[in-house]
Length: 404
Image (tube, rainbow, N blue to C red; front, side, top):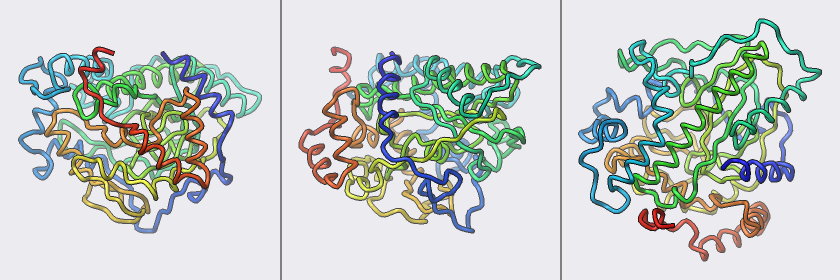
């Protein structure tokens, strides 16, 4: 399943759209961080708040979580929410859930609140590469071989590390240690199935998310063990430890979009990101630009389609809607409370913004690669008009997916 994707991703990367110099500056990645920035605690993450905060933890919240793991009962009768839709969704989450639940008695949720920890001790002897460029090449080749769709490398930045992790046992913060010499971050991108996402919002479309997490866990663990076998430290991280989006942007995997997600030139918005913190000396990639910011300034597809009205059709700003938004960074910001409340209501993740984003396309097809060139040019208004005329991103009934 990954071979064709990886080949096309490599071809796209070989035609690198625009790489920006000055890797260590916020400007190159499009960040504007003020003195008001104070870091973000995972305790304030909206999913963590749903465990203890009455303003987020509603009557729908527990049912939302139960529908992922307990025996399936009480599924909705609506299209896309039948038992077989939930059955596939929950099965795709199975691998990620095994890691998350393995050490719960020890107050760990690997991959979500804590780094993945199922690793063997590495080698006592280090492999020394002739250069950091060669080490980076080897890591990227290994990562794509074991299933990564995208790989980028950037420097460690303490600002994006959670000031504390969330404890499910105490419902409070706990320490968030990272090895001091882990100065490099490998960012792994896993493409999600766009045909499943075309059924969003539905329980079925949640299968794309679940597979993204389960595949991410396997790739992160494999590459982290590979790095340890080379004699270096490696800490594999999914949703835990640090915010992934700034690292993905700095590692040159995509640009930040109006819907608060990273948009990549290979897969659009339908990508999940993981990261590995390591002390293996590596060469950092550069941020890229391929017309996302300019297109988002014209397009309001995600804002218009968002069922919860959580995505404002506005310019980047310093606005924060609630404590689940990071302060002191100028960017497009969504209202996480509104977003999650809709998820809890429909008993699955939504992904409508991913489905309707003009950049979410199958770039193995030449017509979509030509569209991307238009979007990156002064003819982006034409690209947007073509997208709207094609009605790409229209919701597909889950019954049609099952019959396809």
